[in-house]
Amino acid sequence: MAYIAAEISRYFILIFFAIYTFYCFRAFARKTEQGKEKVFRRQRVLILMIVTICNVVLLMENRDLKYVFLYAFQLIFFVGFTKIYQIFYKGLSKLILNNMMMCMMIGFIMLERLKYDYAMRQMIMAAAAMGICLLVPLFIERFSIWEKLRWQYALVGILFLLLVFVIGQERYGAVNWISIGGISLQPSEFVKIIYVFFVSASLTKITTPSKAAKLTFREQFKKIVIISGVAAIHVVILVVERDLGAALIYFVAYLFILYAATMQVVYLAAGFGGGVVASVVAYHLFSHVRTRVVAWKDPWNHIDNEAYQVCRSLFAIGTGGLFGMGLGQGMPESVPVVESDFIIAAITEEMGLLFTICLILVYLSSYIMFVNIAMKMKKRFYKLTAFGLSIVFIFQTFLCIGGATKFIPSTGVTLPLISYGGSSIITTIIIFSIIQGMYVMNGREEEVNSYEEQKKSSGRRK
Image 1: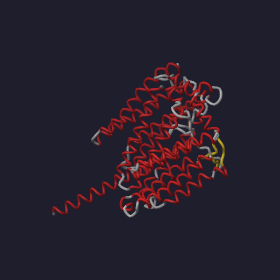
Image 2: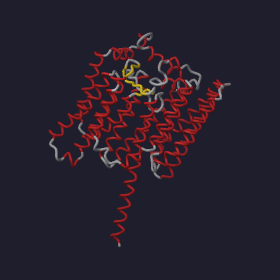
Image 3: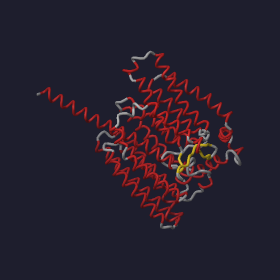
Image 4: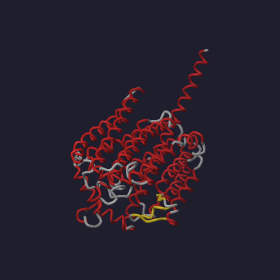
């Protein structure tokens, strides 16, 4: 019976998710607020339908009442935070909210399928992060010092990264974890947000038109070199920790923020050239980098050793085909670290390639909305920060999916909002919330400016 339910449900899940994905881009074409609200309301209904179907299938598969409790927790989480979030973030982007919820629900379901405890812990961490992030609009609106704390960001970030050399733990070849009071944290996940604030604030100081006009090209270039040097310290620390996935994210984020701030292609080209040289150096310095490159170049001749993880991932993806084997019918446990770095293999095996393509499009629609919000920001600091966080988000997604599908060498990063890991889901929720907070703040400023203009125009008529 469970097999039949999984077999039939996979088509309904795919159809509902495809419709949801269609609405992600349909929302951009809607002109009126009423039309957009109709789309977003339908998206939320589709999320509930997918969550319900998946939990019914898992309950039939496991025949354990604790899965009913987990389903209830998911419903409370989704409905509760969707309502509460909109109260604290008045005028928020509902597309971003829906996408964040959809990705988290997919993560809960896949972790629930892999191991009940994974899903339970992930939901608790997500609930804590959502609760904390209800205060983000307050901090963004009430404090005007965020743009001024340039070198303070860098100091805090570097010190936090250096903690792993004192109380760090090694996992999967990288010393990038610390344990405090029994709670394990990955400093690089949290520092990447502070890092984007540092880069954005520093470049705003020297590239804002009114301030840049007072600097000669030589003076501005010197300051960019200094900022680049401090940014490089972050990257070098991560390289020494052998956390090369995070190092790549930091490096690419800096390059794109620098380009957005200066619009100088030469900086972008020089950065990528330096990145190529650094990659070659890393290949010769670190054995685990060579191992991952070997696994990427020729996995089938190293299937028993270096490429075992990648090959198992490819087998799982190939087995799933277009429509998947059905929730609970695959063997995702055969892929090492499937709950975090390689969760896309489990999703594709059981949900299908078409489902994964829709998921990628959902991530892409979120990124498009992030960039759209960044472009609407009036203050340069907020503009660069929103853009930088959007690059962090989409590039991490690319690294995770690319590594699991052998498109690029595996870098050991998680899939945002879906992979198991408290540090990962907390920081991604914070990134979404910061961008939402900026969007809300910008909307309120536009309303105030519009009201003042109307007031002035009415005064002239009198």
